[in-house]
Image (cartoon, rainbow, N blue to C red; front, side, top):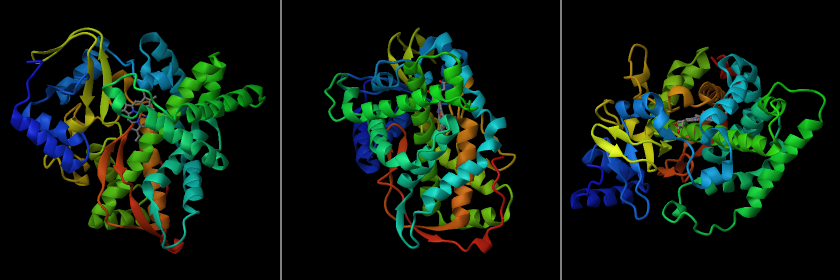
Length: 427
Ligand code: HEM
């Protein structure tokens, strides 16, 4: 059953879905519907296996996780070196233990004011009545926040210098022709990636010379005696994993509010009056369900695995699909609809069916941080500005994360501050 031949009907439906959704997510949904929770993508030279659903996810993330490796041979590995995201075994556990303390939920209240200040710095540049792209603006906010949190580095004045190199780094690891032709020549990356490296090495060198010790991630890495190269690998990993995901989450949440004006108004009313906005929290959860920024987990099979009689041999590539799990009609009622109320009190989702942050011992290290950040930034922006969606079509683009393309253009108006009375809590 592992090398299923696709029926012509499935092939045609997959092609139509690709044209309609302008993204490989369309054909993936067709494969899931026609073939089931286990299939192989039939690309030339690249035939990864895809699994989804709670049973398979539990195997990959928990019960049989020793049979898979996070480390692959791809541009992500080339770029991130020994980054915590793409190493295995003891090496992974050592880096992870060093990186957890600054992201522990008990530290989150320390960051609330800073998150609000960084949001204000970006929004203060907006002119009343102008149209801004919330995909771009969210990236600025998320970058300022992550660099300040993890490396005590204020990048406001450097945004102009690092912006393009960061976008190039993200492009470098995004799916592209290298998927089917691994060593395809790739032009235009050497210089910006070197600029980014120089920038990070500069931060490390400067910190090594400082007498005052910060209580941040960079300091933990330095104090652990890691080399500059390994510290750079962790910094770049955290910088990308910690801001590209938040960028996508914020941008999708704005897109969904724009597309659902009634819920948008309810959320505004709530953030104006409630100390702890519950509807906003559910909107963010539903945004993560419909458009999980990390939509697949990428693994290499270290030991043959069996999914209900379907075998994946050693050394093959396998994806567990968060996106397909989140849209499985067997788990979710009206799976394709935006319905924040599905996360209201008392409604439980089956274990391993809602996995925007993965799961098991290697679940996202920034899960609590990322959610608190989204709540704080969204609530603050909705309290201080009105956002009018310009009603343009949006599709999900498969880059390093799932992004709303061509962006989320919204007309903004400054709100009278007198209307603002809600609290701005991370909890
Ligand atoms: C909305 C925000 C975020 C989402 C949706 C998200 C999603 C995920 C997912 C799904 C995984 C597991 C991937 C897999 O199983 O292959 C993961 C892992 C990871 N995330 Fe996040 N993430 C977010 C924010 C962050 C932040 C803020 C940071 C850092 C500050 C971060 C750092 C990491 C790291 C280092 C890992 C690898 C952990 C390990 O392998 O031990 N993420 N993330």
